[in-house]
Amino acid sequence: MNILSLLISALSQGMIYAPMALGVYIAFRILNTPDLTIDGSFVAGMCVCAVVTIAGHPYLALLCGMAVGALAGLLTGLMQTQLRINPILSGILTMTGLYTINFMVLGGQSNLYLQRTAVNSAGAETQVASDTLYKTFRAFLVELTGNKRLDNNLSVLIITAVIVAVVAAVLAVFFHTRTGMAIRATGDNEEMVRSSSINADRSRIFGIMLSNALVAFSGALLCEQQRYADLNFGNGMLVVGLASVIIGQVFFGKRSVTLGIISAVVGSLIYRIILQAAYKIDMPSYAVKLLSAVIVVIALTLPLLKRLVTERRANREEETEA
Amino acid sequence: MSGLSLIGLKKVFEKGTPNAKLALDQVNLEVASGDFITVLGSNGAGKSTLFNAILGKFRLDRGKIILDGEDITRLKDYKRAYNIGCLYQNPLRGTAPNMTIEENLALAYTRKARKSFFAVNKKDSEYFRSLLRELDLGLEDRMKTQMGLLSGGQRQAASLLMATIAEPKLLLLDEHTAALDPATAEKVLDLTKKIIAKRQLTCLMITHNMQSALALGNRTIVMDSGRIVLDVSGAEREQLTVPQLLQRFRENAGKELSADRMLLG
Ligand SMILES: Nc1ncnc2c1ncn2[C@@H]1O[C@H](COP(=O)(O)OP(=O)(O)O)[C@@H](O)[C@H]1O
Ligand SMILES: [Mg+2]
Image (cartoon, rainbow over all chains, first blue to last red; front, side, top):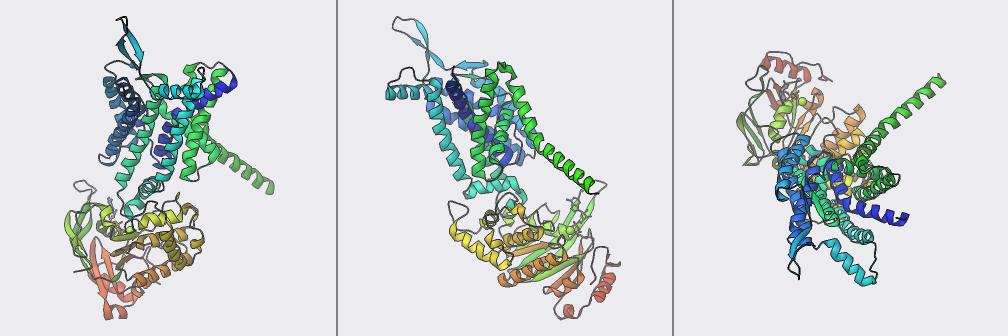
């Protein structure tokens, strides 16, 4: 593969995972609350999407995936606000419970391919690939351009970029509406939100639902793109999302919510480019998680290092003055 | 009947444990609409607990709270906040640091604002600007600045606006100038007086400055061990000096009004 097609492949993956990064951004940066539901809701989005896609409704499948993520978020939110369970534990509980649900959704197996059994003209049973968003869009592009050897990743990139652009724009607008601003304020100073006669519990629950809906939407997109759902795909997804958000922040800082949304998307793209580059130098695929964890640790340590360096410099200056 | 009625409020913290603490003991108080009451009492007397009871931060063991004719005893805290503004000692409590001044005000105004798609809109912003101008701190030109970048005094002044922006039926001030340096504290207190007078607010203000407790407002109450032990207003209060106040407290409470944090002058 040449560099360009590698880049296109990385960007297409980055776009598919971008809603997940946005979900992580909402949970960790806007609501300021760690949420471990994310690993579970990503897979839930995948599984539900797979089943509905196989049933012949690839677009509805994306919405259903999103809805199941919102539902998972609702459970975590209720545990956090109504049962007063610690946020991290709430997320772990939902995630753990979801494993069983996801297993059941997949019909008691650990993965499911997007295909159905059909009988061909000769009367033999064959497996027919289900229609997906990506299959349909590629066919449309091929017809439009007349190029039968069109890079599949390019078509994935184009349609996903359009979807992500719409999602990001809607989010940017939403976080400036009254409901959206209340969610931001709840993460910033919950007491002040209550003092302003706004139901902070409801804002928080809604924020967690939105976050997990986005994460599950990523799972659904990935399911349609790779044509299968896998029960164990979510492990460490949260760290991947965090890495993307943090990388994005390096470029855009922490200023406004709109910039934050853009930076999560860009962070997801850059993260996938880094991974692609690592694969290129023969990093085995199982090393991905370690790499992600290391990126997050380094990024989280940077502020501390920065402070140490400035303090040391200040100390040295004091010494030379004395 | 308008105003605030507190009827037989009782609260024991950590009930049933060796640490049980009677924090409110049969508190009765009738606050007339337009009253500006200053609240005195030594540390641990139950002043903040009284405010928290009114704000709905915990369930009372006994008693009733009636605000403007409505029984709010069982109302959730955020629902009471529709009509009650509050301000604490810590200037950080009242504002969201990562949001702009304008957004903070818009959030506080949400309860009374006209419906609009965007939280920050031109019409409201003009109103906020005029309110900020009255503070005379130059904040009207910094509406897009993040709240976290302001000084403690500026943030407390902004919190004051936020607490009063929705024209509350009751304003509670819990030592809201105690954490500020003297000059800033005076400035914020001046603003407080101005806003209370302009909006004709009913207000309870906890302070540990006895002099200003007697000088401000139209009525002073003193708390001790969860009870109101002194309640003066009208001509009686106008005559009252700080030494006389201490004397009256000694007679009623059977002990000295501890002056550890209390400023006599
Ligand atoms: N949430 C709480 N849990 C247990 N004890 C409390 C709580 N809040 C206040 N208290 C106790 O109630 C008493 C009154 O406190 P407070 O109302 O804060 O006094 P102050 O008059 O100084 O504002 C104190 O002894 C305090 O320790
Ligand atoms: Mg107090």
